[in-house]
Length: 204
Image 1 (spheres, one colour):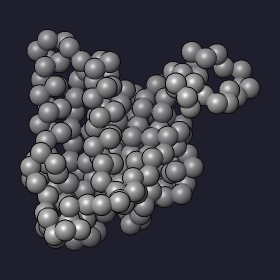
Image 2 (spheres, rainbow, N blue to C red; image 1 turned 180 degrees about the vertical axis):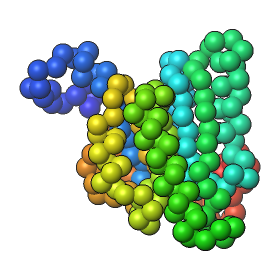
Image 3 (cartoon, helix red, strand yellow; image 1 turned 90 degrees about the vertical axis):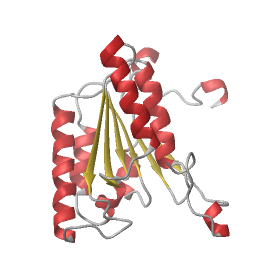
């Protein structure tokens, strides 16, 4: 794609403008660091365009304060106060169940993930947001807590012009095949390889 120009233009009857303005389903997967970071970078661009932003974190604990959340909440407040950018909502859908043991059984966590997905499906149907980040959503799909085929169908048939970015390792094949943009993060070197834990300004 030299200079952002597509190498192939499909014979689909659409104009260049129509094709450019089609909604995007993006998947950031792979073992490397940066999947969520890249998704929030896209969300920042969307906010700057005045898009309504909805973030749904499926793994992070409700007690885990990440830098992106603080920044986007501030941007949401800026929008409320001045009209600059877009509205922002940030939701955490679980108790941090993939990395550490939290209260509740696996059945409880599965039910919470399913409830979270149903709320997102409802919002997609009503076109509540213009840009969605489903952060670490591949995990409840991988664990069978949310039905992959249902997710693909809802995302494929979503109305309007709603962009969706999904992050997490081991994205299901059906989701990858349905996506317009798939990026796989590959780990080459990581500080943890040398026994270094996460640090402020890098991991949170």
